[in-house]
Length: 520
Image (cartoon, rainbow, N blue to C red):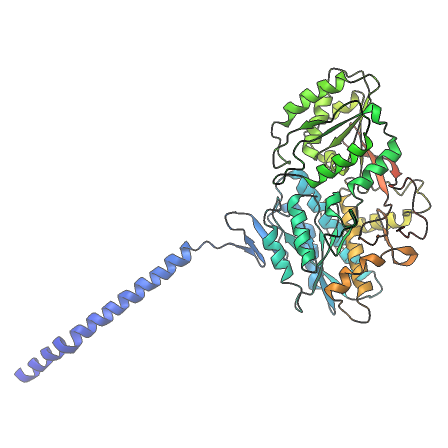
């Protein structure tokens, strides 16, 4: 027994006690390692928002490309996003992907409304392409690309889109873009440099177009909306602006390299050409860098209205080159001007379309000898009453109105609340029609065309058989991808907050010929 006890103590001393210590140490390390993993996991900032979408570095904003029913946390977008997701999942057979590039996380109510309407228009065109084109292939799969509310994260989203051109996604075009901003200009340049076709919906800035000074800085870019220059030409052909009776009010830092605004700048330059010989130098205002904010610009406009009243009695026209927030501030200030007995007409670009839904607009200002007219991208009434013989048709406009009504039902929609007066739904629908028409013409005998075949197609979208018969008018592209002599509805803002259609105007002063072939 003594020997056994000694052996036991020896075994415990030599093997078991150290072994228990080693096991305990090992268990401690495992537990600590597990805790460390848990701590690291908990400490790791999960940046994902949805499949393909994440929070940008240093930001809580969700950006990227969504191919699911993700609504970007914006309730107004939810119905139409779900309709798109349902349509995408129903696709059988050959397809290509088209991305709609828009600021889906916009916080400004006006901008979000713009996004909603463009999304609705793009979806209705997708549905039309997939279900009412006599079975023509490929089908269109629509995905949503968000560069951020201000476009600040465009690089991330562009890189993601560039990675979707392969066999799985078959991305062949990016539509949308919307606002003519510096960030969107960089995004378009980056996409087209990668060989991806881009179709602009409501971009109007001249420096976001090809063909200026004979150069094409954005190879593969096509547009549905006229340039600011063409809008200004159409506006003046309608209004017959006299340089000696007009003044210009413009964005002071539109050409700032860091905080400039291509839309305001090119509109300003177009108006300046019209006002050569004016007795008055232009008056400028200083907006905040984010032009959707109020800033202190209202102070500038109060002073500018005094200058307006100091002009010669024959001066009756004000040309305004700036964004809609500043435009609304200026209209409000004009409503309080000291010379209310004098009649003025304010003429501006398509940014004025936002004012129909702007609750901060003083509508009473329009009852004090002030008329506000602007060039709209589209208007639901433009083609329904006495349309011209060429340049568009009532039948094409009515076809979209019928589709919009179907979009309120369960078969096509529901797509949410619809407002056609700002023209965004109409123009986005036409841009998507241009997109899929170009893709299907480009495919030849193959189911899916190459990137190069798509971007080279725009120069042939013209003539009686290959133009796009849009709800906003004919889309006949010149060799640089710009619409030739596109119909420009002139619209008047009413004191009820509505947009009253006045007349269709034309950059060339008259509608295009029935062949719709742009001259050299």
